[in-house]
Length: 240
Image (cartoon, rainbow, N blue to C red; front, side, top):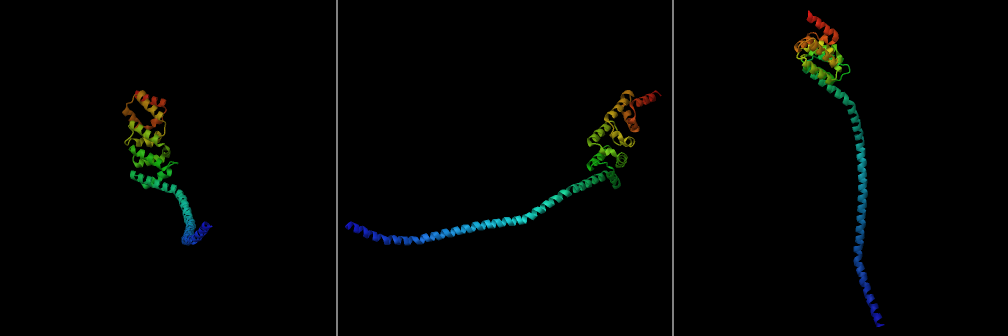
């Protein structure tokens, strides 16, 4: 019994100590709860506010950017519509400037631009440039193209090959003017037909290279002649 009494007394002494310890810890626990609650409120507020602010920002950006996007699309469409016209104007200006530099008058340029049968501006410029490189002046080029506008339809590579061939025949450097006046189709006729005429003059009529050049320059219509008739005429001429 004595031992039991001592345990009861010890228990009663521990009760005040326990309450005292709990009293000391309670403010800290309460403060921790308040801090935790406060922190949660801040996080919640910040989170909600951030989302709200972000959504507001997105809505604001969309509100600002949507008309801008529409304006950009309209501007792009307008630019696409204007581009061919502007490019055409720039190309026309460039071609006119080049023709003026070659020595063509404004009247000639207007005529040349009006007679081109479906040829592009670049095609027109390329063909005229080849004639100038062959030694022709602007006036005869204008006359020839006005008389035979179909020359403007020639592929530029064919034109250059024919120009090179005529130079080999000695018909460059000013001699081509008469040939073009009399026989503008020298640029459009088949290469084989020209070769056959030149071969006939050299091999059967026994003309030298210089004589063939002189014949083609002074009488380019021989290129249109039937080969049999042409051979007969020259043989008859040689017999006289």
